[in-house]
Length: 535
Image (cartoon, rainbow, N blue to C red):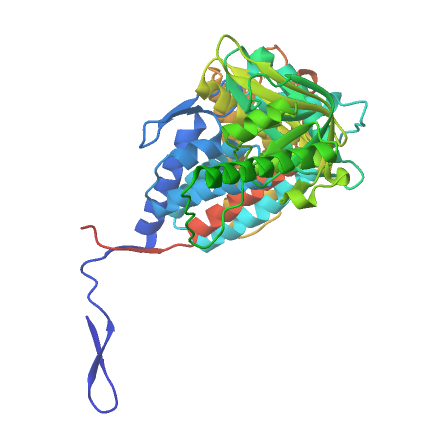
């Protein structure tokens, strides 16, 4: 323990006993951090690309997730190490910002760490490595801008968007019907997109899934699907030109907030109470009828008496609809959510061309479709699949495709996929390294080597000879000066990604480079790890 004395000679403690804490310093700390970062990247490396493997994760309560999405794998993994947590954060931020490329960004960071380790062993200072990486990432960033292509598309010509979404979906489990899913994703995004402001609100796209049927039955509904059925089995199953009252107040007599007691000592009093209640229900139903509603959607339930009355007055109703769904229904039908019966007016009703109840299979599963709405800005993607895991994974894949379509609407630049962009950047960074004197040159070259990790992983996962394939593609790029040559994962017979129609969004790639470099710089700057004692 470190002791010091003040001016009166009294001792005071500066650093408390450190025996209980474990401490790694200097090179050891950096090596330990790098190896834990690499361990996470190694897990995700095999699930990169169209031939990537899936991971099966079991949560503590026994739920099984089978996924290929980098962010999901890392979210579900129970990571203990601090540096590994940084990698999880890295893929999560890529997921929030871009939505796609969550595996690639971690593989990239792992490759950068691997190269940094070699440089550290040669005795290069970590700060110089970090600075060299920063310079190299800027060179790569600008090079991506140069090799990017603008993609022209309009509301009628959506083929470019569909092609890019298909690239995203090809690495997922759903790749056998990627064409139809990509079209669904693009249509959904264009339905809710604001093309003037280049903005897309993904909250308006609801993704629902139901076990049963086959993946090909997945459909896009211009409207809302609610997983509920009509409150009474005899109510009409199909309502055309529906006027919808959206209520958040319960169909029952009001309960006083204070404690109360009702003394009933004669039959007459009971009768009057009952009649009072019935009249109350009658008034409620009548109020809905008077404003012209032909369908009531209620957030709360109502008892059998109200149900019976609604049935008699032929006013169909749906009960127990969740708050988020109510908001989407209100947006789609142009209605207003009404908190009190007294406030119901004809203007607050939503309009829908068709409301129908649809039954699935032999089970009693029913769902209500609200279609042909006044404002078709809210859409639903309805997924079918063989089992629950398949549907969950399809939801994640569709989410990635939606994000890609959104990014293209925001910024319509694309680069070619299949590792061609990375190889091209690697060549550019390697060439630029000669201009930098000093130690940074090593780090810039190391960055160029690290960029090769993604095409290498793609080749490895596709069962090709990794080094041979990579060097062949690289020499082809340099010889033909063609930045579209990538790894031919699907064995089509051509390395030109233009012919294979493999595209990725420019902002997604740039974000990958920047995020990976930032995290690696952060990890390299840590030279002292003090962790609490293990009990």
